[in-house]
Amino acid sequence: MAFIEPHEGRRKQVYPDSQGIPTIGVGFNLKRADAPQRLRELGHDYQKILNGTDQLNDQEINQLLKLDVKSALFNANSFLPFQDQPKDVQLILTDMAFNLGAKGLNKFVEFQKALKIRDYSKAAKEMINSQWYNQVGNRSKKLVRMMKNITSIRGPS
Image (cartoon, one colour):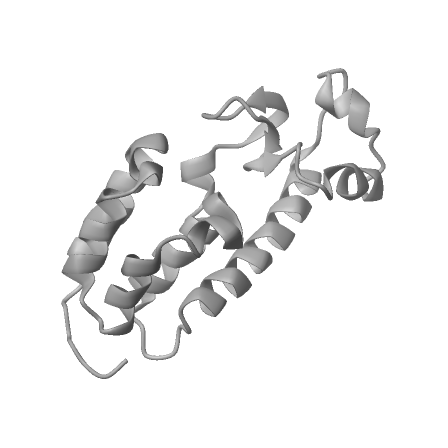
């Protein structure tokens, strides 16, 4: 959670994300299918949150974030099992899964191939060679720097 939040920011009221999608908390997309239900579970009216007449408190933001990070961890580990991967690869993949979702992350086929053979330099190049890289600004540049700094150890996939 501490790694993802600086990339996303934290806001108690609705705001448009970099793609213009209404968002709240720490990157919680209000147009996702489960948003009305998740907000109802917190005792909020979805429409009031969406139109900016209601807001979340820090505890509620943390609840949403905790579940989304858990989902991102699952999706990242499904994309590339964490076993024997450096901690920085795990952090990068979790952040990307949080930002892109499983569907978006799974589009990074060549990136995944490079990670499987532990070619972190090629993985960084594949990150740069994507639409995502230009969409998320400093976030992608930081993650690419992290990936480039991981020592490449080529081995069996």
